[in-house]
Image: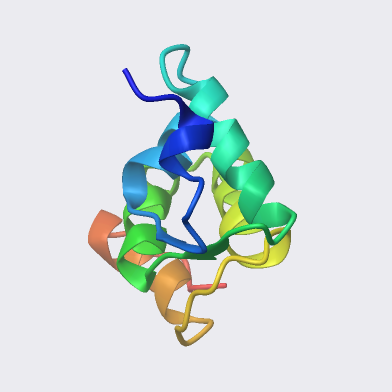
Length: 109
Protein backbone atom coordinates (compact mmCIF):
# COMPACT_ATOMS: atom_id res chain seq x y z
CA UNK A 1 0.00 0.00 0.00
CA UNK A 2 1.25 3.48 -0.87
CA UNK A 3 2.19 5.77 2.01
CA UNK A 4 0.38 9.10 2.46
CA UNK A 5 3.61 11.08 1.97
CA UNK A 6 4.19 9.34 -1.35
CA UNK A 7 0.58 9.80 -2.46
CA UNK A 8 0.67 13.54 -1.69
CA UNK A 9 4.24 14.21 -2.82
CA UNK A 10 3.32 16.09 -6.00
CA UNK A 11 -0.11 17.29 -4.82
CA UNK A 12 -0.52 21.05 -4.61
CA UNK A 13 -4.33 21.18 -4.54
CA UNK A 14 -6.87 18.72 -3.21
CA UNK A 15 -10.67 18.62 -3.48
CA UNK A 16 -12.33 17.30 -0.34
CA UNK A 17 -15.77 15.72 -0.38
CA UNK A 18 -17.97 15.12 2.67
CA UNK A 19 -16.44 11.95 4.25
CA UNK A 20 -13.07 13.40 5.35
CA UNK A 21 -14.85 16.11 7.34
CA UNK A 22 -17.11 13.56 9.02
CA UNK A 23 -14.17 11.26 9.78
CA UNK A 24 -12.24 14.16 11.28
CA UNK A 25 -15.04 15.59 13.45
CA UNK A 26 -16.27 12.16 14.57
CA UNK A 27 -12.69 10.93 15.01
CA UNK A 28 -13.23 7.75 13.01
CA UNK A 29 -10.56 5.30 14.23
CA UNK A 30 -9.79 3.89 10.76
CA UNK A 31 -9.31 7.25 9.03
CA UNK A 32 -8.45 9.83 11.67
CA UNK A 33 -4.68 9.66 11.24
CA UNK A 34 -4.94 10.16 7.48
CA UNK A 35 -7.52 12.98 7.54
CA UNK A 36 -5.72 14.72 10.39
CA UNK A 37 -2.54 14.79 8.28
CA UNK A 38 -4.43 16.04 5.23
CA UNK A 39 -6.06 18.84 7.23
CA UNK A 40 -2.68 19.67 8.80
CA UNK A 41 -1.22 20.12 5.32
CA UNK A 42 -4.16 22.26 4.23
CA UNK A 43 -3.93 24.31 7.41
CA UNK A 44 -0.21 24.90 6.87
CA UNK A 45 -0.96 25.72 3.21
CA UNK A 46 1.32 22.96 1.95
CA UNK A 47 -1.74 21.88 -0.06
CA UNK A 48 -4.58 24.11 -1.24
CA UNK A 49 -7.80 22.52 0.02
CA UNK A 50 -11.07 22.90 -1.86
CA UNK A 51 -14.56 21.86 -0.89
CA UNK A 52 -18.08 22.83 -1.83
CA UNK A 53 -21.27 24.27 -0.52
CA UNK A 54 -22.79 20.82 -1.02
CA UNK A 55 -20.29 19.33 1.45
CA UNK A 56 -21.08 22.00 4.00
CA UNK A 57 -24.81 21.42 3.56
CA UNK A 58 -24.37 17.65 3.91
CA UNK A 59 -22.33 17.82 7.12
CA UNK A 60 -24.69 20.34 8.73
CA UNK A 61 -27.93 18.46 8.03
CA UNK A 62 -27.61 15.77 10.74
CA UNK A 63 -26.49 18.13 13.53
CA UNK A 64 -29.37 20.47 12.65
CA UNK A 65 -31.79 17.55 12.62
CA UNK A 66 -30.59 16.46 16.06
CA UNK A 67 -30.34 20.05 17.30
CA UNK A 68 -26.70 19.40 18.15
CA UNK A 69 -25.21 22.88 18.01
CA UNK A 70 -21.85 21.66 19.35
CA UNK A 71 -21.22 19.41 16.35
CA UNK A 72 -22.75 21.98 14.01
CA UNK A 73 -20.30 24.59 15.29
CA UNK A 74 -17.37 22.16 14.92
CA UNK A 75 -18.22 21.71 11.22
CA UNK A 76 -18.70 25.45 10.70
CA UNK A 77 -15.40 26.16 12.42
CA UNK A 78 -13.52 23.58 10.37
CA UNK A 79 -15.06 24.47 7.02
CA UNK A 80 -15.50 28.22 7.27
CA UNK A 81 -13.54 29.81 10.07
CA UNK A 82 -10.37 28.01 11.14
CA UNK A 83 -8.96 26.63 7.95
CA UNK A 84 -7.67 28.04 4.68
CA UNK A 85 -10.07 25.81 2.76
CA UNK A 86 -11.44 27.47 -0.32
CA UNK A 87 -15.24 27.32 -0.50
CA UNK A 88 -17.08 29.79 -2.66
CA UNK A 89 -20.60 30.19 -1.39
CA UNK A 90 -23.10 32.68 -0.06
CA UNK A 91 -22.81 32.78 3.76
CA UNK A 92 -26.47 32.14 4.57
CA UNK A 93 -27.25 29.22 2.24
CA UNK A 94 -25.28 26.41 3.95
CA UNK A 95 -26.84 27.13 7.34
CA UNK A 96 -30.36 27.56 5.92
CA UNK A 97 -30.47 24.49 3.69
CA UNK A 98 -30.18 21.95 6.55
CA UNK A 99 -32.78 23.89 8.53
CA UNK A 100 -35.16 23.70 5.59
CA UNK A 101 -34.33 20.03 4.95
CA UNK A 102 -35.08 19.15 8.58
CA UNK A 103 -38.30 21.17 8.70
CA UNK A 104 -37.08 23.30 11.60
CA UNK A 105 -39.39 26.17 12.49
CA UNK A 106 -36.45 28.30 13.66
CA UNK A 107 -35.00 30.99 11.41
CA UNK A 108 -31.64 30.48 9.76
CA UNK A 109 -28.69 32.03 11.55
